[in-house]
Every structure is written in C-alpha cells, then in structure tokens.
Image 1 (cartoon, rainbow, N blue to C red):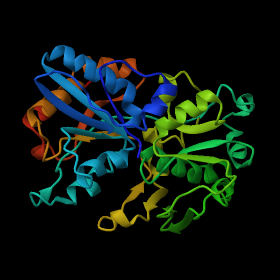
Image 2: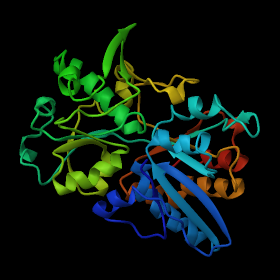
Image 3: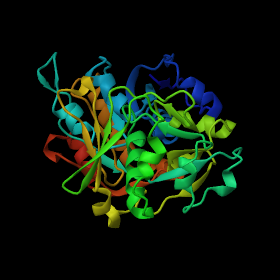
Image 4: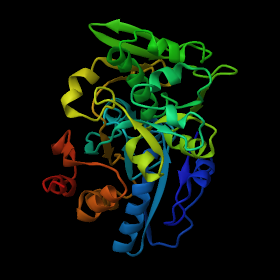
Length: 361
C-alpha cells in the first residue's frame, strides 16, 4: 500500500511526492528520542511543517512521520503491528470501530479509548490545468462530465481512504440535488469488475463497496490507494479531474470546482442532509466490526494508541498541535481547524491533552 516516510523537514513537489508514496524509508536522524506520527495523506503539507516546528522547539527529539489513506493508518497499528505514538485520520468515525472495539492481543485491552476531533475540510472537484475539458467544469456541469466515458476521473480507494468513500457519498447526494436519480449508476456502472451497489433503508441510501474493487479494462476511472496520489496525475494531465479536499487543492495550486453546500460535507447547516447516505465496506478483514460510515461533516481526529512507545512525547506533540503555533501552521497551509477541539471521552484522555482542549483556537 501507499506510504511516505519523512526524512528531514523538506517537502517534496507533487510529482516526486506521488513516487515517494510508493516507498517506506527510515528517518536516519541522530536524535536522542523519536516520536512516531502516522497520519492521513491529506495532512502531509501541514504535518510536515508541524513536525519541523516541533523539532525546533524540542532539541534532541526527532519526529518520524508516515502517511496513508485514513483506514490504512489505523490498520498499521491494529493489524500490521506498527507501534505509533500518534495516529491521525481524516474521519472521526473510524477510530471507535477500528480501535475501541478491537483489542490488542498482547494486552487484551482496546487499542485506544479516546479520540480528539480537531480539524475539518470540504470536498471539491479538482481539475487538471492540462485537461482539454478544464474550461467546461462548472458547479452545474460536472455531473454530466463524470458520466462521459471521455473524462478521466480520479477516485481514492474507499476501502482505504476516507476521501474515497466520501466521494461516493457526494455522488449519491448529487442525485437528489441535481434531480438525476441515475447519476450514481451512470458514473460507476460498468467501470468496476464488481459493481458498487446502492440500497435504501429507512430513508438512507446505503452504498455497498465490494470486497474486490478493480476498474474494468478501458474504464475512465483511475483508482488509487490515497487521494493525495491523484495530485501528481492531475498536474501531469493524466487525469481530467478528481475529488480532493479543498485544503489539498489549495496547497498544490490546483483549480477546483466548489461543490454545492448540500454535497461538500463541510456545512454544519446541511448536516441532516448529509446523513441521508452511508457507505458500507464488504471487507473480510473487517468482519468483526462491519464498518459503515454515515454521511456527515468532515472531521479529522487523532488518538494516542495504548501501546505507544513514547506516550509522553505523543502528548507533547498533540498539545503542540493544539497550541498557537500549531494553529498558525495549519491555517497557513489552508487546513481549517475547529474553533473548539472536541474529546469524545475526556475522562480517558491524558490530562495534558484535556487541558489543551480548554483553550480553543
């Protein structure tokens, strides 16, 4: 799967970044101690700046970072045996089923029992500057362009990345918004070897993602493990468009179509409408938890796993993120933060983290 490890503070240009996502490498530093932070790929730019700033403020500490799609971030801890000090996902819904409801075989305890929601975002349709269709994408025209087999459309894999299943939510919500009851089917049908199906239960449209998700030969959909991997394909012109977070589009200078508030998963006043859609993953590896994600506001969340090698350093990194310097870095990188970070189980969180949440950005 996709992975990028940080080796120093420099940021990679998008083309190099896409290649780097295929590799894992060591930090190679000579610091006395290390804090390991694994996070969702859409946070690469601000979290690299955070890591560099934290190291400057904490001489002798090396921040080792690694990024994946949000589901993969948690699987690296709970299934692949990685010991991380801080894990960060693009969807607060992921941590409870994948960490609270599953136990570490070594201890018999849950992998975590609290999480902190701290940032938000909106989905947009990023457009390649080299696309022959770039001038045709508008808030009204994009659904029809996605249906066209001539449009090369990038999608993050919903089995690994929150941006992927959120893109499917947007497509389903768009049927109602644009008055086209077959839009989801027209965009996806025949373009995957195993179809993505939609059912309706109690007024909610449930999108069913199959265990095997592969594009058909000649499909105009390009599937990647993480949404950040689509950026280089947009810049090179290998894609016409792709669903991305607005922060990522802005960080990379990409033109984008702002989606209607009813679709972009970023407007609190539209929360009830977002809940009309859910996504289920038909994944054998998740047989014990049956992951289903309800449409809702985009909320990034983090936790410190129970088996973190450096829990004290992890707490220091989280409080640094929640401090004035962390907020400045996040906002400077076009990553929206919540005015008041929220702990779901305050009594379980470390005292230092609880205190940091009492001082809103």
